[in-house]
Image 1 (cartoon, rainbow, N blue to C red):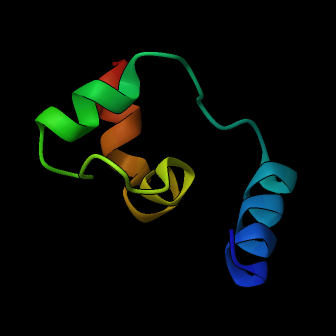
Image 2: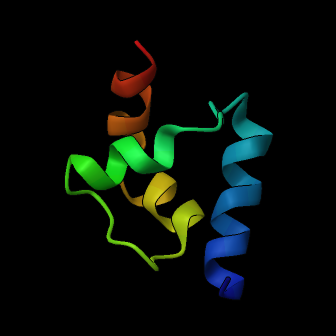
Length: 56
């Protein structure tokens, strides 16, 4: 993870709770938001609205 991405993640966590759960990776891949081999936490940073919608 790059230092910029790590800093962004830490800032987001400081702002409040983020949603994290197992199983969302397969669904995000199925929906086309990441491809196998992608660094998954970056998908969460790039598409947080999709992760929220997925859990709703």
